[in-house]
Amino acid sequence: MAGRPTRIVSSLQWRLLLVLTIVVTSIAIIGDILAYQTAFRETQDLQDAQLEQIAHLLDPRSSILRRDTQEDLNFPESARTLPKPRVLAQTLDSPYLNILMGDDNAVQNLQQLPDGFHNFTTVARHWRVYLLTRERERIIVAQRTAYRNHIAKDSALSVVWPFLILMPILWLFTAIWIRRLFRATQEMSSELTARNANDLSPLDTRHVPTEIRPFITALNRLFSQLQAAMEHDKKFISHAAHELRTPITALTLQIARFDEPELTIQDQHKLIEQIKAGIARTEQLLTQLLSMARAQHQQQQHLIANNAQKTALMPLLRDLIAELLPLAEQKKQNLSFDISEDVFLPVSSNDLYTILKNILSNAIKYTPVDGQICIGIRPTTDNKTILLIEDNGQGISETERQLVFEPFYRILGNNESGSGLGLAIVKTLCDQWHISISLADSGLRNSEQKAGLAVSLIFSPDKL
Image 1: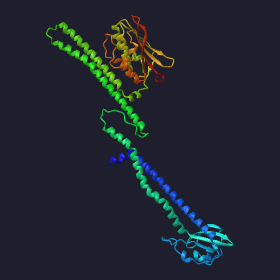
Image 2 (image 1 turned 180 degrees about the vertical axis):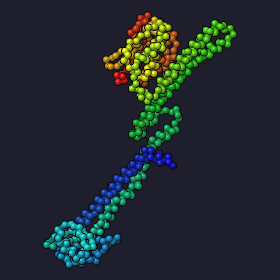
Image 3 (image 1 turned 135 degrees about the horizontal axis):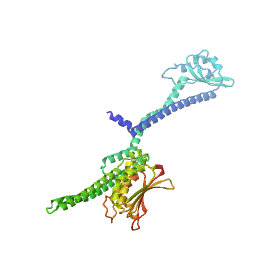
Image 4 (image 1 turned 30 degrees about the horizontal axis):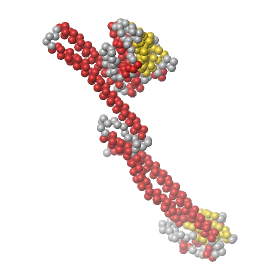
């Protein structure tokens, strides 16, 4: 039972219904009060106009104005059941006026009042009187205040009652209207509940209210991104399975050769070396796969929180060169850099290390013996900083420079082993840290006088 009140309080539909009911009811009550007061005043004004009209129609010399009509007006002020309406019409010199008004001093007090309307109080009653002087005679037309108020209240209530009767109908109409208004969202919620977990097709926004449409549009965009991510993961898993199948199959066949009876000791040693090389390649492929998966699934919140980091380039580069230098020395390559100590880049140290390690590993791998690899910083006119890695290897043709960033893509025609994931990992990390990466011809030439490859990492000034 406790969950239902909480659900009602958190429901937009119930809150909207509650607010509208309170607002409509408050406005209706205020309107009823104003309508009652207005109708009451208008009825009083109408009765005043009747008294004035009667006074102007009377003949001041008529004997009727001196007639005793006490039996028609003698009723208590607080009586619940009032007699038929009577209007007192007399002249101020009438001998019956004091008797009719129930006060011996009534005439004396009335003579002191000017012509016009007055609220007059006697010993026992309250009156609304109108005094008029005609043909040297003063005429008084009076009406009991109690009866006037009774008539005014009845008239005012006749205006208010329709509002009070229509109020529940208005509440019901508001509830039905709000329920119909939220029906589209409820139907959409039911549709999402009934969907299959793999159904990420966009929701129909044609019958959705304008205020909710941006939310549905954002939800459809999220569905599209999830669909793209799922397709990318499927493709990645498919490629990974294919890439792993080949070395594992080769290792299985090589191990199976140990059962051959004619296998010599020399062949066994050779076969062991091949198995070791295969295991090393498989280990490298697995490492690259894990790096690629980690780069693709880093949390955006983690990146934003660390976006203010700055990593000193030179200490990191010294550690990286110390790790890769044996590989470069095996091919007698010249590995040089021209970078000052005060260079800081807005990347986490781990990701910057991964980016530079993959780029330099490729440079060492695809640069021939006695080749050159240079690392430097190049400023630009728009205050951007470019980290440039150049080599005099075989380079990459312009038609393939965008394709090499795709996972598992490898350039045909070279004898170097690899997984095809290095530059894909670099591109993924660069995109996450808003680093622009581009490939171009290097200024260094190889023995065939062909340009090598230049990899540029461009850091915007607002990130430095």
